[in-house]
Image 1 (cartoon, rainbow, N blue to C red):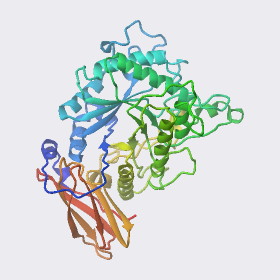
Image 2: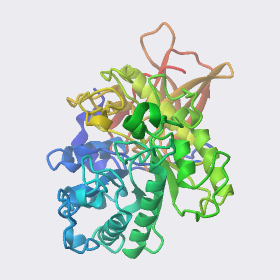
Image 3: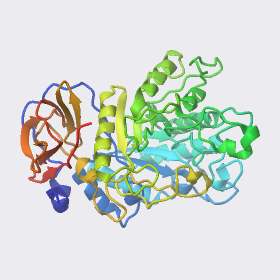
Image 4: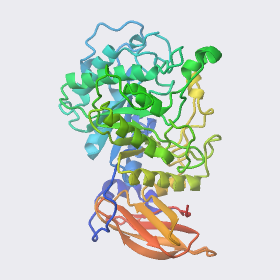
Length: 488
């Protein structure tokens, strides 16, 4: 077992101390921030200390945290809004969110805070579970005012929350309903537009003069049309394709021409969850309005067209705020664990290579328990994500060792192009690249490489091999070793 897992307490204290060990090679000018979402493992006081220690050893430096409105809101289970000032943060039960963000503050990690459903029962139009139906924009604005006062720069956590995002996957019926109107047109985009505008106004009312807010947070797939006459109420629960959702939210038609009655939206970026299928990160869905990681350029193009149509005030960067590759035992989308590590690195390189991408956020640290098939969450079931670095029992996958040292190998020009990152490093550093010659069981040193100041490196090699891996020793003396990686 690689030493960095054995020496976790040492790494927790020392791994972020790094030193520059040489000049960095010339690389593409683009870099990207990396957030990490640990979900319930970080919100539970029982599992939080160990999870944070693991994340620090792995090289995490920023978190994405989803804050569920109904979890903190006063009287959230009642049908009637309580007679309280809901712009006052003292009337909310922030609970474990405060504990987690306080730890991020102590570690000097930045936080992306996504404010999302379920809503309080009293803030929904039908007062029925799962409390995601037409949340009231005015109530949401008041909530976001309280959020700004509590988690904004003038609150107790200073600038720890550096970025806000409004709603998780609003184009998916598990988070916002209805998705469609009975006439077959999308309903959720306009509901979301009102929520976004209200949320942005709430942050300003709470004292943040120029809030940094992400728009979108869209799921990767959906429908472009539904037939209510044929499917009745089931049609209203189909998810809306992300690019159709984007256009409708920004008042654009299919040719990206804007309605004159809509004002442009201001945002710090567009957030998207570019999950793919078991076919891997290079898979290209035929549905033109779906956006998986293999067709990320579709989103880049759509945002440029939206800006040209004056639907946004700036040409928005892309924040990939949720991503992961499912591994077995997921029965529907899972790939072998070794392939998960390879696919995850390929996806990160795709994002890194797109100069539009400002951030990339993996999901999760530990697998969920296995659940039902995709889509079962709409009817109250559980899906369960097996995108973690560890199995649900805590046993590490190859990805646990690959995530700190992501590596891709691709055939190129009669040789091989290698790309990688030393994630725990904080300055330029040296690493060792190993190759397993074809027909051999042993690895040999291919080359010692120096990264750039952000930890990225590239290498072209004519040496043939069956697998490659990398080794790195931190300034504190902890040895990291990535898993075997095949060429793709």
